[in-house]
Image 1 (cartoon, helix red, strand yellow):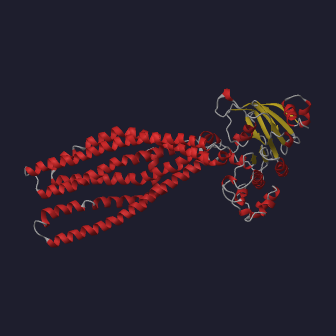
Image 2: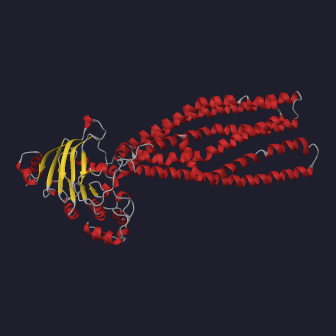
Image 3: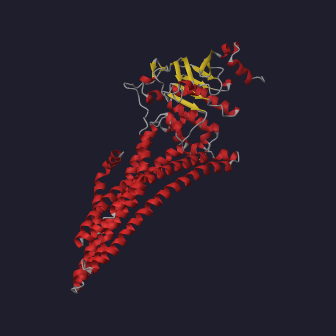
Length: 575
């Protein structure tokens, strides 16, 4: 883990080096005051060197002015090194998330992922700046101050230094408890963010069902978890700092007693004793800084560990030797496909499913909920991987495992019931289907989706902001934007996953017209519960319990007494 962390310094090595040099100079300039104090007490003042006192004081002031500028540089540019490293990690994490498989997001809540990308990486950036600075400058100050104190009085210095092992042992003892407690607190913070993200996203549902108290109760569970975790972490931190602070206080007591005895016995003069008392802080302060740094180290190390946990999740990868496929004809075939989301054979969603869909035809999937219809729709674009022994899916006679995922997905357009629109304008959301499309093509796609007239009625037209997830648009309007997006993509294969099931009848008719236009000349796979929308399909497959139990045209399926006939009679019993 340490090597991976250090590698992020490489792009910023020049600025980081200058920052470290400035930090070292700040530490060295800190030695000026005790050295000058010793000269004052032992030389200038006893010898009444008035001019030397004034000049020395002005020189110290000038050096402090230089140290002020150096501190400004370290605070500004040093933090910028950490910030740029944080931005680099966040960029890599976001790019990695974009390449992770569907299954990862099935198991990880959005709020928890956001916590790792924001809070955790902020702590990492703080560690990236302060960590090397504290370790380097404090180490230099401890060594230099120790040497300087020895020049004043070796034995008194050794007595003070004897307390350091106690400080180290105390730090090591409480460090593990502190690390575990801070890790627990980060996990609870992620739970809060996940709950908050869910509650804010669903605020309209909460208001509709007047369940604000229930959401508050759910949030409070995570909130209390955070309070409990914080209590553990602050308890560990309190024990850590109180014990180490006590030991540093012992330093001062030892100096007071031992120094007084040395002065009483004439083994040190008053000037050297005064200088020693002033100078010993040069030794104690960096030791205290290193002790205090343990909290930041734990925060940063825990944050980086959580960062690499996600970075180590395997990305979606093409099979060795996979090739791009250009514009496909659109033949689709499923051969003995078996699939389970958790990889366990006893919990299969699909069992030996075989299905042929000829190019340019429309095939409908119907059946009870949970039968596996949507899973089939997810497998064709290769959103989930099939094991070697679990069958195969072919497009134009070629196994999708042997094709690059991007090239397969470029040829597939998907319209779902739950439309997702990005924050931004109508134009931006339509253009998402083809980022290189000009405005003319965007308008053409909107016209084909029966959206253009509505957009023209808006004050800002295609530049109308639609809000988060398209909240300013109705369900039908959002659906037409998604259809326009697919028109602009112009895929050979079209998957309609209950695209009209959430719409009212009048809106459904309008959307259905757009979908019929969209389906022309494309291989279309339709998932529908409303059988009225798929009666004209070329083939209908009934999916029940992870198997295709019936297959044929509407007329053929109506002649039997199977699931399809029962579903149809149930939906149209009034007629």
